[in-house]
Image (cartoon, rainbow, N blue to C red):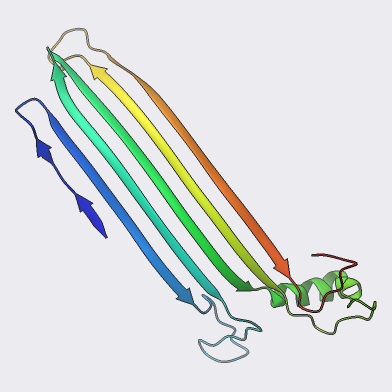
Length: 171
């Protein structure tokens, strides 16, 4: 969804707020494996992705005497929760590096072809603010000056889980 509004206060001042957002839920996998069949794939656990985000912005333009003033600010927030089958990587790591020797149950017995799942949780946010003043384009000597501020954060956790894996080791 997206909403934008233009408010003309007078011949010199405008305010333009906008907001856009999306909520998306996916199940399945983006690729395919030709050896399994055309446009088919083989997974060992479910793949689920929930992705939600919102972006808001505000622009204010106007004149102070003969000078053009502009303020622009924005805010972005995103939350992604996903569950991804990671078994194909476990099989590859075992085949290439022999890491399967380390996959053991609580009694120290090897796990045969362990299934691995990633539980991912991401949180993003970002904000910015900018203010500018500019001299008229018709002036012989022209200038633009301003200030800008930005702050952002990305919180991420990726929990790799192998069912049956003993507590003596971890992913």
